[in-house]
Length: 399
Ligand SMILES: [Zn+2]
Image (cartoon, rainbow, N blue to C red; front, top):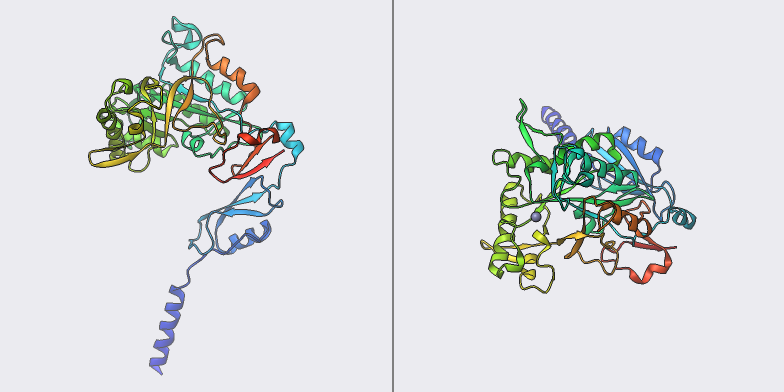
């Protein structure tokens, strides 16, 4: 008899131990049924509404996939369809996902008032490569107030443009890894970096607090000196990655590729990838901002080696290259888009002339990318359909 009891106990224990929560397919449930399922399994459920061709209220995706294990208190994100927008809405919002995209090029941000410089509009040097913190903050407000929202450069090159219906994407980039991009003034008692609020990241962080819906982010292109703050460089890189910013490659010595040999090119590009791989493994972007915009033509002998090469016995690949100046670039869905040769707008002020911010954004009024709010579709006026390239196999909707 004792033997049987023991056996029963073992069966019970094994039975309890094997009770693992596995997610079920939620695609055919409605919101009330999902709420009930989440409650029953102690899951925190949040809903995200997206426009799609599916009927309104239909589940588009579940963050914990069917068959995946989960624990209680895990977060379950459900995308629910808002239904498809009708052609009138596209027309009213002038949706055009073949419109142009501004990639802004910044360098230094200086802790100065714009009235303290000898140049116009918050430029700190003649050409406006250096800007005051005040002017930079005004730039951010200008983009935001003109219905632009920030996206990652990495997402742009991969055709992932996630901004709400009627809004346009804008991308921020910083070259040279200058100290004033993210100036660290010390460490707090827990060892976290304290960031100067008037450095570029300081300005962006305070903007983020005021406008969480702006999704502000930027990509910083560094050389071998990283952010020129030896004692803090490692902490800075980690902080940027943890806080939604990206790091890219600006070559080890800020080389001019026009005057470089093939082996120089591989060393310049490969050594920065090697450094980033050591400091933030797998967390940087494989994008090169070309110093001086050089070599200026893709036919230069170094170009193939900027894109792929070998350094220290390791092969690297570059997904995209950025040029210097002067205007917005194509939509990633345009057949003319070339991610290996992306144009940027120099973010400076010249009274609306010579390709400054105001000049470019005036042109963009006629021809900007305007989103349908759905990252999974490409929506364009029918007259543009011959200009489409769709390597991401997104659903194409013309109206
Ligand atoms: Zn540079």
